Image 1 (tube, rainbow, N blue to C red):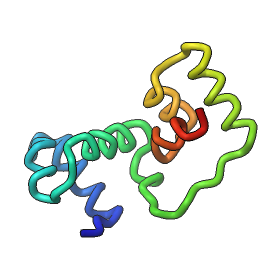
Image 2 (cartoon, one colour):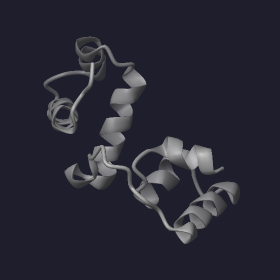
Image 3 (cartoon, rainbow, N blue to C red):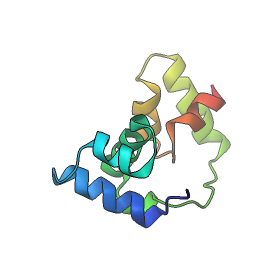
Length: 96
């Protein structure tokens, strides 16, 4: 089942307003709970505007800075992904 960006935003807002738990959303959508937490973190750090299914392009400089920050212990993969407004922390994991 494909979940649209609008649906992701709707469920994140419901979570943030304490209307539903991550477990309830996970069960309702058939998505692992960790995926729901990724959406929540992305929303908190980047807002609605970055919920897009279009591939985002990153400069070589951004990639290098993000990888260097991680390798130099300046934060977790998630923290650094948020800092550089990456669409997902798994992108940073692939670069590393």
